[in-house]
Amino acid sequence: MGIRGIIFDMDGLMIDTEKWLNKYWCEAAKSYGFAMTEEHALQIRSLSAPLASEKLKFLLGEDFPYEKVRDKRRFLMAEHVKQFGVEKKQGLDAILTYAKEKKYRLAVATATDFARTEQYLRSIQVYDYFDAFVCGSMVKHGKPAPDIYIEAAKQLQLSPSECIALEDSPNGVLSAYRAGCKPIMVPDLDVPTEETKAMLYGLANTLDAVVTML
Image (cartoon, rainbow, N blue to C red):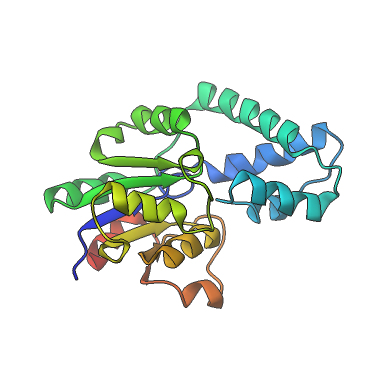
Protein backbone atom coordinates (compact mmCIF):
# COMPACT_ATOMS: atom_id res chain seq x y z
CA MET A 1 0.00 0.00 0.00
CA GLY A 2 1.49 3.32 -1.08
CA ILE A 3 1.93 6.59 0.79
CA ARG A 4 -1.16 8.79 0.44
CA GLY A 5 -0.91 11.06 3.47
CA ILE A 6 1.65 13.09 5.40
CA ILE A 7 1.11 13.98 9.05
CA PHE A 8 3.19 16.84 10.44
CA ASP A 9 4.18 17.58 14.00
CA MET A 10 4.41 21.34 14.57
CA ASP A 11 6.81 22.67 17.23
CA GLY A 12 10.41 21.98 16.26
CA LEU A 13 9.31 20.42 12.97
CA MET A 14 7.48 23.14 11.05
CA ILE A 15 8.31 26.09 13.29
CA ASP A 16 11.47 26.87 15.22
CA THR A 17 9.86 27.12 18.64
CA GLU A 18 11.33 24.27 20.69
CA LYS A 19 14.45 26.20 21.70
CA TRP A 20 12.23 28.98 23.07
CA LEU A 21 9.84 26.58 24.78
CA ASN A 22 12.82 25.00 26.54
CA LYS A 23 14.16 28.39 27.57
CA TYR A 24 10.84 29.53 28.98
CA TRP A 25 10.16 26.25 30.79
CA CYS A 26 13.41 26.85 32.66
CA GLU A 27 12.66 30.51 33.36
CA ALA A 28 9.14 29.70 34.56
CA ALA A 29 10.38 26.93 36.85
CA LYS A 30 13.07 29.24 38.25
CA SER A 31 10.40 31.81 39.14
CA TYR A 32 8.90 29.15 41.42
CA GLY A 33 12.26 28.20 42.90
CA PHE A 34 13.04 25.08 40.84
CA ALA A 35 16.35 24.58 39.04
CA MET A 36 14.94 23.13 35.83
CA THR A 37 17.54 22.71 33.07
CA GLU A 38 17.22 22.45 29.31
CA GLU A 39 18.06 18.75 29.67
CA HIS A 40 14.96 18.38 31.84
CA ALA A 41 12.89 20.29 29.28
CA LEU A 42 14.10 18.06 26.47
CA GLN A 43 12.70 15.04 28.26
CA ILE A 44 9.13 16.35 28.11
CA ARG A 45 9.11 17.38 24.45
CA SER A 46 5.83 16.28 22.80
CA LEU A 47 4.59 14.61 25.99
CA SER A 48 0.97 14.98 27.05
CA ALA A 49 0.43 17.15 30.14
CA PRO A 50 -0.14 14.24 32.57
CA LEU A 51 3.05 12.51 31.45
CA ALA A 52 5.04 15.75 31.43
CA SER A 53 3.84 16.52 34.95
CA GLU A 54 4.77 13.04 36.14
CA LYS A 55 8.21 13.28 34.55
CA LEU A 56 9.00 16.70 36.02
CA LYS A 57 7.81 15.70 39.48
CA PHE A 58 10.13 12.70 39.25
CA LEU A 59 13.05 14.87 38.13
CA LEU A 60 12.48 17.92 40.32
CA GLY A 61 10.41 16.73 43.26
CA GLU A 62 6.81 15.88 44.04
CA ASP A 63 6.11 19.47 45.03
CA PHE A 64 6.92 20.78 41.53
CA PRO A 65 3.88 22.96 40.65
CA TYR A 66 3.45 21.75 37.08
CA GLU A 67 0.28 23.65 36.17
CA LYS A 68 1.56 26.96 37.56
CA VAL A 69 4.92 26.59 35.81
CA ARG A 70 3.22 25.58 32.55
CA ASP A 71 0.93 28.62 32.70
CA LYS A 72 3.92 30.90 33.33
CA ARG A 73 5.79 29.28 30.43
CA ARG A 74 2.78 29.84 28.17
CA PHE A 75 2.69 33.51 29.16
CA LEU A 76 6.41 33.96 28.47
CA MET A 77 6.10 32.19 25.13
CA ALA A 78 3.08 34.28 24.14
CA GLU A 79 5.00 37.46 24.91
CA HIS A 80 7.91 36.19 22.82
CA VAL A 81 5.67 35.38 19.85
CA LYS A 82 3.94 38.76 20.17
CA GLN A 83 7.30 40.49 19.89
CA PHE A 84 9.18 38.25 17.45
CA GLY A 85 6.62 36.03 15.73
CA VAL A 86 7.44 32.43 14.81
CA GLU A 87 10.03 31.26 12.31
CA LYS A 88 9.53 28.58 9.67
CA LYS A 89 11.91 25.67 9.64
CA GLN A 90 14.05 25.22 6.55
CA GLY A 91 12.29 23.46 3.69
CA LEU A 92 8.71 23.79 4.98
CA ASP A 93 7.40 25.67 1.96
CA ALA A 94 9.15 23.28 -0.41
CA ILE A 95 7.66 20.11 1.07
CA LEU A 96 4.16 21.59 1.39
CA THR A 97 4.19 22.80 -2.20
CA TYR A 98 5.42 19.42 -3.43
CA ALA A 99 2.90 17.51 -1.33
CA LYS A 100 -0.03 19.52 -2.63
CA GLU A 101 1.15 19.19 -6.22
CA LYS A 102 1.27 15.40 -5.77
CA LYS A 103 -2.14 15.43 -4.04
CA TYR A 104 -1.05 13.97 -0.71
CA ARG A 105 -3.55 14.45 2.10
CA LEU A 106 -2.01 16.54 4.86
CA ALA A 107 -2.67 16.72 8.59
CA VAL A 108 -1.14 18.29 11.69
CA ALA A 109 -0.71 16.23 14.88
CA THR A 110 0.53 18.41 17.73
CA ALA A 111 0.41 18.58 21.51
CA THR A 112 -0.21 22.33 21.18
CA ASP A 113 -3.82 23.47 21.59
CA PHE A 114 -5.81 24.33 18.47
CA ALA A 115 -6.00 28.10 19.07
CA ARG A 116 -2.21 28.45 19.15
CA THR A 117 -1.77 25.94 16.34
CA GLU A 118 -4.02 28.01 14.11
CA GLN A 119 -2.37 31.25 15.21
CA TYR A 120 1.15 29.99 14.51
CA LEU A 121 0.39 28.35 11.17
CA ARG A 122 -1.63 31.27 9.87
CA SER A 123 1.16 33.64 10.86
CA ILE A 124 3.55 31.81 8.52
CA GLN A 125 0.92 31.39 5.79
CA VAL A 126 0.74 27.57 5.76
CA TYR A 127 -2.51 26.85 7.63
CA ASP A 128 -4.56 26.36 4.46
CA TYR A 129 -2.32 23.58 3.16
CA PHE A 130 -3.75 21.15 5.71
CA ASP A 131 -6.84 18.98 5.48
CA ALA A 132 -7.04 18.08 9.19
CA PHE A 133 -5.76 19.18 12.59
CA VAL A 134 -5.52 16.96 15.66
CA CYS A 135 -4.31 18.57 18.88
CA GLY A 136 -3.43 16.97 22.18
CA SER A 137 -6.71 17.96 23.85
CA MET A 138 -8.67 16.17 21.11
CA VAL A 139 -7.49 12.66 22.05
CA LYS A 140 -7.61 10.66 25.27
CA HIS A 141 -3.88 9.99 25.44
CA GLY A 142 -1.22 12.35 24.08
CA LYS A 143 2.17 11.46 22.69
CA PRO A 144 3.97 9.06 23.03
CA ALA A 145 0.68 7.10 22.96
CA PRO A 146 -0.46 6.43 19.38
CA ASP A 147 -3.88 8.10 19.70
CA ILE A 148 -3.06 11.39 17.98
CA TYR A 149 -1.62 9.73 14.87
CA ILE A 150 -4.42 7.18 14.68
CA GLU A 151 -6.93 10.03 14.81
CA ALA A 152 -5.03 12.11 12.24
CA ALA A 153 -5.00 9.21 9.78
CA LYS A 154 -8.71 8.69 10.43
CA GLN A 155 -9.40 12.36 9.72
CA LEU A 156 -7.58 11.95 6.41
CA GLN A 157 -9.67 8.82 5.69
CA LEU A 158 -6.50 6.76 5.45
CA SER A 159 -4.97 3.90 7.37
CA PRO A 160 -1.89 4.82 9.44
CA SER A 161 0.23 2.57 7.21
CA GLU A 162 -0.58 4.90 4.29
CA CYS A 163 0.83 7.90 6.17
CA ILE A 164 4.28 9.34 6.60
CA ALA A 165 4.67 10.98 10.02
CA LEU A 166 7.17 13.84 10.24
CA GLU A 167 8.63 14.34 13.72
CA ASP A 168 11.59 16.05 15.37
CA SER A 169 11.45 14.39 18.80
CA PRO A 170 11.89 10.82 20.06
CA ASN A 171 8.54 10.92 21.88
CA GLY A 172 6.82 11.95 18.68
CA VAL A 173 8.54 9.24 16.68
CA LEU A 174 7.42 6.67 19.24
CA SER A 175 3.82 7.88 18.99
CA ALA A 176 3.80 7.63 15.20
CA TYR A 177 5.50 4.24 15.21
CA ARG A 178 3.03 2.82 17.71
CA ALA A 179 0.18 4.07 15.53
CA GLY A 180 1.51 2.18 12.52
CA CYS A 181 2.62 5.24 10.56
CA LYS A 182 5.96 5.51 8.78
CA PRO A 183 8.02 7.95 10.88
CA ILE A 184 10.59 10.23 9.30
CA MET A 185 12.63 12.20 11.82
CA VAL A 186 13.94 15.66 11.07
CA PRO A 187 16.01 16.30 14.23
CA ASP A 188 15.82 19.66 15.94
CA LEU A 189 17.37 19.83 19.41
CA ASP A 190 18.70 16.30 19.71
CA VAL A 191 19.78 13.43 17.49
CA PRO A 192 18.02 10.07 17.43
CA THR A 193 19.26 7.30 19.68
CA GLU A 194 19.78 3.81 18.32
CA GLU A 195 16.41 2.89 19.82
CA THR A 196 14.72 5.73 17.94
CA LYS A 197 16.56 4.96 14.71
CA ALA A 198 15.15 1.42 14.79
CA MET A 199 11.64 2.89 14.48
CA LEU A 200 12.37 5.21 11.57
CA TYR A 201 11.23 4.95 7.97
CA GLY A 202 13.72 7.70 7.20
CA LEU A 203 15.99 10.39 8.65
CA ALA A 204 16.43 13.83 7.09
CA ASN A 205 18.42 16.93 8.01
CA THR A 206 15.77 19.32 6.65
CA LEU A 207 12.15 19.14 5.52
CA ASP A 208 12.95 19.68 1.86
CA ALA A 209 15.18 16.59 2.00
CA VAL A 210 12.09 14.54 2.88
CA VAL A 211 10.79 15.09 -0.69
CA THR A 212 13.24 12.51 -2.01
CA MET A 213 11.76 9.90 0.38
CA LEU A 214 8.17 10.29 -0.80
